[in-house]
Image 1 (cartoon, helix red, strand yellow):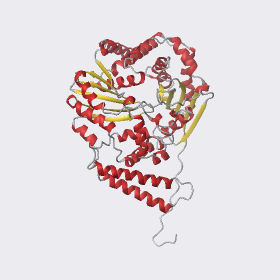
Image 2 (image 1 turned 90 degrees about the vertical axis):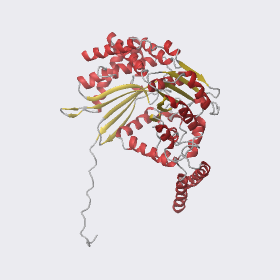
Image 3 (image 1 turned 60 degrees about the vertical axis):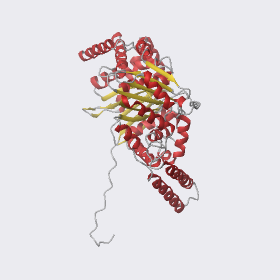
Image 4 (image 1 turned 45 degrees about the vertical axis):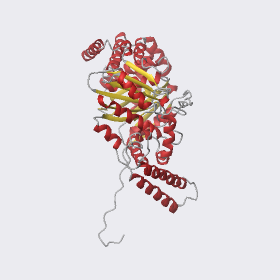
Length: 516
């Protein structure tokens, strides 16, 4: 209780110290401009240090992967670091011809590989050799990692990108006097991308898949969980693609994906740091205006049908047990979105949260227990998920069934009992403090501005979201919990531990010259 009180007081002090961090003060400092080609630029000056950060938000993620070509959104994220027609090449004219030959030979190889009958193994080997020879020739024109090295030599830090179900993000930081270099590089990689080293990078993504999913029991469990929770919407996919897809899609496919989704009307670029909007905006406009205008692509039309019966999956593996369950909930645009955020914080934020106190501290049946909203994305109707890992007790490791039953007790409390005034006040204070923390550095602020501008068409929703949290009542929590956390809306996945398969004894070595 003393720790909780100190945390609460610290949150109040943080909010008090950042009283000026409200929408009115930001409106005076945030410059927003939508270019004629449809791209939105944002600039916010912060003079604490002579650096700036940016966040490019592309409104296309794994959900936009074409059917049968899962992983393309993630694949282009990798390609965005391979340079342009001027960066990363020794001779682009020759390289372009060589890359075209790579695609021609790959298509010939694929046609033979995918034959259901009459596949000629000898012909297949010859075609594969021709394809790999074409790759080797194209590689002779490549200057590896030149794009990244230019950024790092200019003082760039935290150079990275990420692909989620909903979007793709690009971000890093640079000294303030490198703004024009950044604007050139960031615009050029979307204006003149070159899909060099594509098949080498495709192998890297396949290895990511192997590490994240195929070789990870929890990764496999989550893949089965999503595939069971969703039967129609693309959220049922794993995001990184299945092995057969990662073997089949081509640089030509990736170019088609890029051409459709990497268009100005589908992008927001936010810059935060020691840059003056009056000076930065003309520079950004100069470079990003060169991106050709195109109509924003239609969104996915697939809607997940209501779940009418409880679903479950079980993974048996010689690994630690794990419990996971999820309930369908609406998208972030739903009027009750703030209520789900409050429930998530109430159940799972820190050592004072209900799940931690009940399962970890008091019953001592779990090492960790949490519940969170917005899985595997927020843009479309998604899941409110719960998970727990069992602890070891006097009789051995506790079971997923024990975790499930204890977790359902806490979920049912939300339906049957009002939360206390103190709990609700602490949750709201903590969530407002989290907002302030997100505004404390250039990186977090650029991400928040670009994200809210994309999702709502207005970055001010970042502040209004906290106002909506303040309006959440005890009755709202019980009402939303009662309509969401019901058995017919639930999918349960458990990882049950089984003994490892005994290794087959190896035959004893035969003395040299002995009969086999």
